[in-house]
Image 1 (cartoon, rainbow, N blue to C red):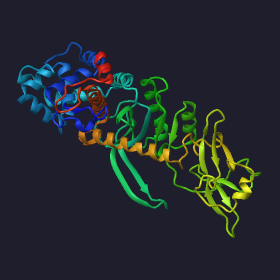
Image 2 (image 1 turned 180 degrees about the vertical axis):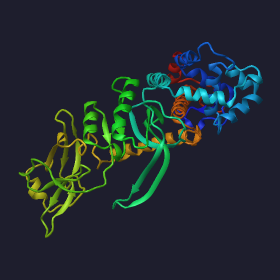
Image 3 (image 1 turned 45 degrees about the horizontal axis):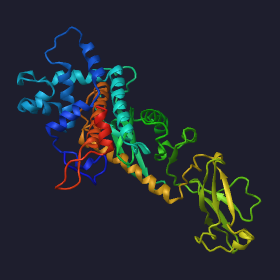
Length: 441
């Protein structure tokens, strides 16, 4: 891959549509699958070994990485492409496995112990990339998306739900339903790095899975895979907005950014002695009321920063910052050079008074980072076929998606470690991140 020096660290736009043999070799090497292959060999025991586990596992990875529409399509390419066969240890064309062999492998990957080993391999790659890239995991975002699947004729094993129907409604500001999305399958929950668009943790649940219950698990896994204190912010939509989760984030000193649409004014506690009425809405925006005219007018107070030691958010008179012209300016600011100042205790309601208030430009800028989750969803669902709906049964679906996530993290590692060229006539160079990733091999 020819990646210029000015490209992002993980330049997804430079990922090859048809990966070369060199890229495929790097992908197979970058996945720490030794324990997983050992477990798969133990399932086979002393049975026939016509198709080694390493070759079957390689076929599945190639199916995903080369973006084949089906396993049969990848098997057909392996019969034609001798160079590709050799990468996964298949020498002769007759040694290419059959479709039913791959179906059994994918079903075996859906066993609980294999799923745990795939999660461990994913965590190892995320940990390695996080240690090499200082910016990975600083700003994060989370979301869930629907994945299509087909029900198997048999019973799902313990711990794995069968696919079922899901429904999601989109409403406007008035609460009217404007769009309905329905699917049959599962939910994929992701926690993603905003800057580099890399998934740091994932979970598969039924379509009824609650985002607010799943996100704490993702948060704990991502924190364990990153250096201590790396994660600073987390953006999530209203589905995960709740007081218990905000308290958990506050305990971990991670700032939550969520979206509120309702707008009901409530009096701000312990401000009855102020010269004007002070209120706040569902979004946590603080207002002062100009009662100098016939009808009181609500003014948004100017955010003046957070005082971490006091656990307060500070607001000041908007007339002093030039945002509004107010008839109560003399009454509120008499003898004050800084103007009327109000300190709001975050403990009143952490979901309304997070460390980054919603009525600030910083919140709006950081909240846009949630679009990174949509782009990651698109790659997982469209590029690597997690949403094609051809996977039958709970075990096969979980095993296949686990392999997709390993390929996603492997490509991220390859892109981050790729050499960069400073220009058309320059030589390939390695930055500190590339050096760190190559030393860790």
